[in-house]
Length: 190
Image (cartoon, rainbow, N blue to C red; front, side, top):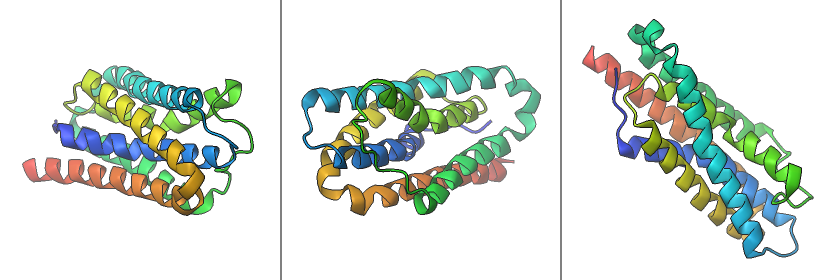
């Protein structure tokens, strides 16, 4: 079973945070002012959901890990490739990024928190097939998402329209590269 080092986890966290960054950029563009409570609410919710979803995926994956141990590297690669590929596709095809409402409040905040963390669920499932400390990975992903969201939210008023799609594309590429690294590493071991 392949081992995932901290640097790979950090790159996965950055890749997963690309959606948070893009949504924070787009969401802050439509706001007339940005307050510290708005920044904290959005960053905290994105960080929390990004941290919890990998744990949920990992727990589900633990129940089936023994059934697919012989091809776990292919499963991890496929999941990361699907998530990364979807992020790349959305970077060039999704024009619904910019919100007209305050994404830092109520049901809209909950909705975008879940939407930006679905990819983390699939990544958590792939973690079940790898030697990963899920608690360290989850904490790393959550903190990274918090910081990246805050940065995106603050930069959104100035650079959101220019960088939003690029950020998501870079995140997808990072996940694809990590998936390929896992696959190649395992194939070279075997």
